[in-house]
Amino acid sequence: MPNETLKIVIPMAGYGKRLRPHTWSKPKPLVSVAGKTVLGHVLDLVAGFAEPENTEIVFIVGYQGEQVRPYMEEKYPAIKAHYFVQEEMKGQSHAIAIAREYLNGPTLVLFVDTIIDTDFSFLKEETAGGVIWVKEVEDPRRFGVVKVGQDGFVESLIEKPDSMENNLAIVGNYYFARGEDLLAAIDHQIETNLQSKGEFYLADAIAIMIQRGLSLRPKIADVWLDAGLPETVLDTNRYLLDNGRDNTGTLASLDGVELIAPVFVDPSAVVRDSVIGPHVSVGAGCEVTGSKISDSVLEPQAKVHNAEIWRSLVGQRAQIEGVRGIINIGDDAEVKSK
Image: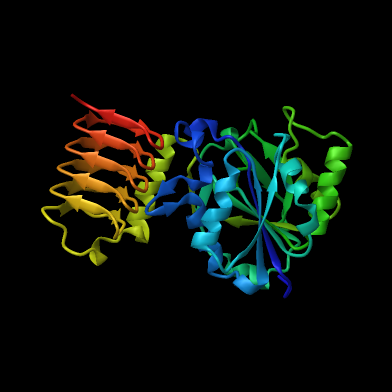
């Protein structure tokens, strides 16, 4: 990667329908897992190699997208960020093209409804024209995959193949040495109306780039975590807590509380007379008393009193009292038993 400003393009204008009720009140990447938002986990991965003074993040937002700017200003104030609104849902390529004034030089495109556990630092020495992150899967027929040639570079992208020989699934992270080339391919895609199911997909633009000579190198992601469904958010929370995001060892003694690691409990949370864990994330400002919680995520300022819950997602400022079972409620909701 040349010594130029890195542009990180994050399209996140979708409605997140599969993650409702949580996405009625916030964009999907601002849902929490293991102590921070999905977006926060992704940005922390990038921060390992992207120097703030040489990095700009370009957000393409939509429904509830006005929440992203204050989040970034609070959590990542050192990073220069730009914001564009996708008014019409015409697909991934259409979204990226909205930010055309920033599509130049080294460009990283991240779709942040997934988290890959990877080290981006190799990009500093990358010589290929592009990199596409992939994950080996047992059954590729449910995914978009890449076909790799004998030279080790991607020959083509295949959507839901009929056969099993190409088993490298596309995970939604891409690097391009020249954002200008990506924009030129997207412009050609839109001019020729190259759509799939009524939308302009990035895969079709990348296919144009390959036809034009792009050397696209596949990069294996050992871990690919989905955060697009309630059950996959919980699975992702479980994985992250199992792999370094547990903070049990840093917590002060809590009054009458049994912690069963791994858990993440924000230091500002108030927890008393409860059993927490395993695999529980308790956000900032939460209140938990007289309860038993396992395998669950409590978003900031949620309150749980005299309850027993498991495999549950509890939205911001939501309140649960006197219930037992699996709960999935969005922000500001209440579930109470008489």
